[in-house]
Amino acid sequence: MSISRRSPAVWSTCLAILACAAAGGFLFNWLMPQGIGFLPPEVSSPLWQAVTPAEAKQLREQGAVLLDAREAGDYGQARVRGALKLPADEMERLYRYLEPTLKQAPALVVYGQSTSRFPAATLAQYLRRQGYPKVLVLEGCLDTLRKAGFDIQQVKRQGAKS
Amino acid sequence: MNPRLMEAISLLSRWFVAGVFLYASYDKVWEPANFARSVATYDLLPLWAVAGVSVTLAWLEFLVGVLLALGIRTRAAASWAVGLLLMFTGLMLYAGITGAGFDCGCFPGGGGQAAAHQAGYEGALRDVLFLMPALWAAWRPGSWLALTPQASARAGGDYLSDSWSRSIK
Image 1 (cartoon, chains in turn yellow, green):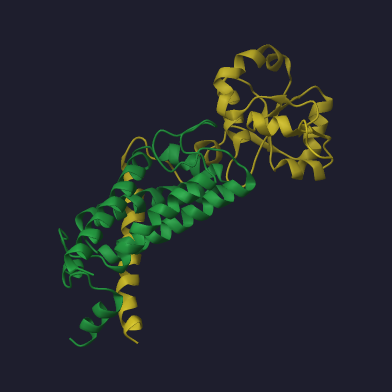
Image 2 (cartoon, each protein chain N blue to C red):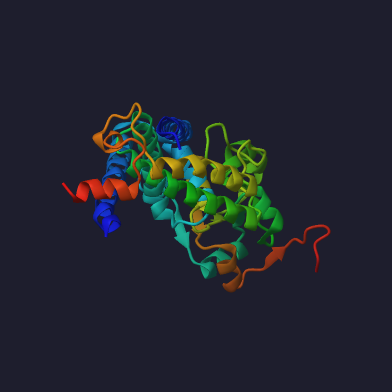
């Protein structure tokens, strides 16, 4: 009985602390230059366009280059066959190596998305800023692309059991 | 046990947890984009929730650290510390089970695969160790160098004795 009388005070204080934290955080993010929005700018105001798997396949047949924006380790494990590696977290460093190839392509199709991350959007935004007129994002994770009929190249680790 | 010794343990526990939370949070508060990236690495939240949760979490850690350091609403702050540390322990175990091997984003100076604070079983053990003083502070907030009456009303008082003294008023 005594615990039930005591509990509301602690719980209400806990809720008040949470509310203060949320308010402080949102106020700070709103006022300070380093603040972040609810969504990253490449998602809230995209410069790229989304593309369906069927359209992406058609574009590839017309010579579009497919880019994998995920981390290098993910690319090393599995990727769409023929996709070039350009991880979003290293794009500024690696871009110059791919630049000659990308400049010749009529369109760039980027993929790479997970539950919490959308590196394809980050890379597509970057490429649009580099002056590429046609940058398209293939939304969905690798599993989605597999189901859509893309040829996924699975790389077995050395020493892994079959 | 000697009440003065209990008070000393309460004060040290409170300040230790406060130090951990303040150290862990200042960088997250000041550089929210970096922390949002760390939260996204776990791939547990939908994209639209990452920024809101990471910002609130960083400020919650900071606020809990400040409240514990000053001894304001100690029991509630320590309860938050316990809850957060339990959550962090779960995340570390999850990272250990999945073999993720990324920086846990817990403390400043992380980043990359060879980070000093890699997510995994070692991180879970560290969080369990931090949990001990947090539990003590929640159980016996103490009154030494505490600013609010809640903490100082009853030296070494626990949940039951506090509630009893309140209920008979």
